[in-house]
Image (cartoon, rainbow, N blue to C red; front, side, top):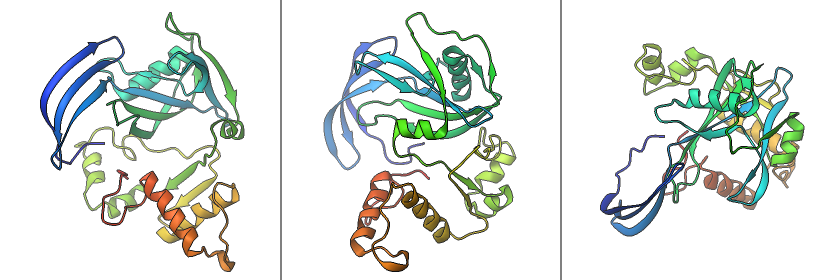
Length: 273
């Protein structure tokens, strides 16, 4: 998630608070485009989360009270990264501490800024498999419960969710890679490159598997839309033959733009994919 765009110029910096979990800065800045303003920024060391998946496909979630929202919530096992700790090491540590599980394999799933409007927390999410039990090591101020759920049960808890596995052989990825990143990763010039040093494992029960080396992008997109329609997350097209009206196409396009999966007309996409 590197930033290739021009950065802001800090006109005045003030550290208002230094804490155990976060720091708080008050900065006067001039941002790209000449915009000047005062920004309150929460500084955080970064976080990790892992979805533990048993061999039978059941997943593990944790439940604990969160004072910030005054609620008991279900979550993935997660926590802050320790100084100098890699995301993978942090995810393994949190799994053992919170739920007493050791991961035989960690698959990177996502990497994103949690609240970029005011915080620099970068979250790394992993899928953990090959699980074995170890004694849990919760912190003194943690009261954590955990349970296992089927994928259907977890979907009911979190709302709209579809697990899609995109399959493409490594040689095809190399052929399509105009930047040569895969070849650099194979030579060891890029460390921890997903698909080379961290190959994906096919999910236990994905709703949809896309064989991108065997079908066109349009075909893959049609299958994704059909899956969303079947699960009730997207309204079926009004016209015959699976065709959408102009209004329906416009609404779908806007939703994809807001999610960052489609480039806005006259502007850059918000997605790094």
